Length: 54
Image (cartoon, rainbow, N blue to C red; front, side, top):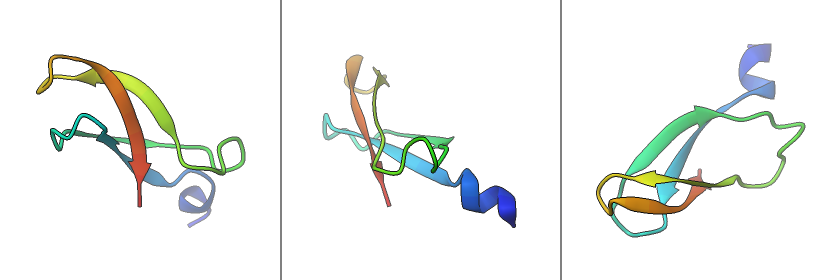
């Protein structure tokens, strides 16, 4: 269970409003706040910000 404590699975949702999500893991020690990554949204067909949802 120590694996889930340090690197939990997070879902990144597109801010373009398309509902597209990425699923990834994050290091809680390096990123204690919510993650924001700029990734490709195939529904919007452009790069947009993806924010971590809980």
